[in-house]
Length: 123
Image 1: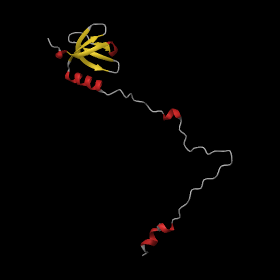
Image 2 (image 1 turned 180 degrees about the vertical axis):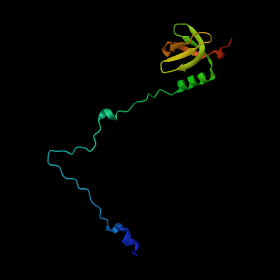
Image 3 (image 1 turned 90 degrees about the horizontal axis):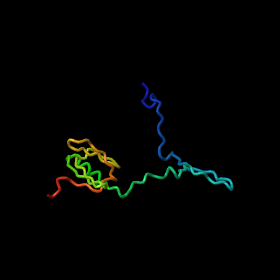
Image 4 (image 1 turned 135 degrees about the vertical axis):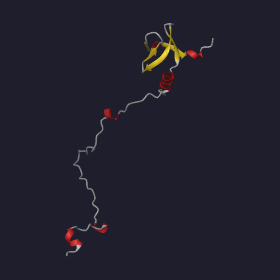
């Protein structure tokens, strides 16, 4: 029988002492020419989306809490009218109010003067 080292055909790896470190040599450029950067970044690609610092998510938290609790809300509009109902959903610009026994209403936030919980009214 043959010995294991002869039958496998495996060559022994070089030891660390045998390894020669190689130095990267960059050629010099002729006069008047400059080296082009390896990676160019376009200014329009660098610009990142800027998040508004005044957005604290407090409004989102308040609306979510009122929707889950199905709280009756009174909305006072800039026109002087008032609406009473539950907030069904909201987005950046408007609210949908579900009024009991009446049709639902979609109201722009810009049309709302102020709003409060109907249960907080002191008679």
